[in-house]
Image (cartoon, rainbow, N blue to C red; front, top):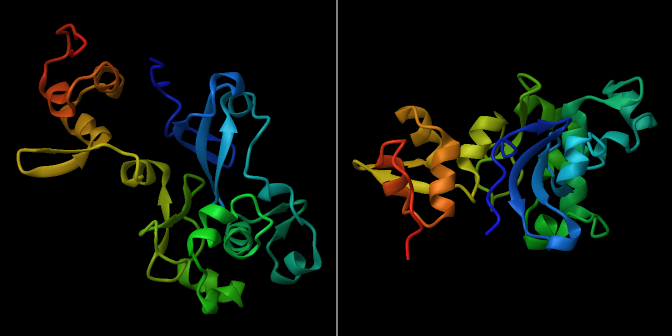
Amino acid sequence: MTLPLIGVEGTRFGYLLALREVDRGARKGRHFLCRCDCGAETEVNLDHLRSRHTKSCGCFHREATSESHRRHGESHGRSLTPEYRAWKEMIKRCENKNCERYPKYGGRGIRVCDKWRHSYKAFLADVGRRLSARHSLHRIDNDGPYDPKNVEWQTAKFQMRHASHNVVVEMDGKRRCVSEWCEIMGISKKVIYQRIAIGWDAVRALKTPVGIPGRRIR
């Protein structure tokens, strides 16, 4: 069994936030699903992340000095502001069938509201500037549209806790993801995920004091 790489999930590599490992086959190396600051998700080879060979979903290099960017005042030298890049890429992955990420967005019915589709200024007025470099575009309902009620800037920590792959555990009448329980209880996430990886029930993994050796459940 391949154990999870502790310390990669939730780590930022350039404009990319590593969400979770994905299986691309042993010959292709280890890959992680990442969310770019523009809001797009892409799968990146772990070696490329660590070497900084790949820093974004590709949006950083596209059309950096076009007339449209200069007109909106969203270009600084050869780079775009994160807000403008997020707006452009949001529309592209929802409407351009040639975009490699289209199947996960437009291809499954994710749409950009008309108000934002036709106006970057309207998009910026609704979502505002991101609060820090730790924030990226986040859809509250992952199956919902890009519109003012469903989009906000959020931190990597928040997005990791609310990612669909997160394990939610109910204890003492409360439901929280594993990482949040670990923070509350003062337990190392590394220990808990290692216990889960060898077959422990999540509740048992959290409630068993650290230091007690784990055994594979038959």
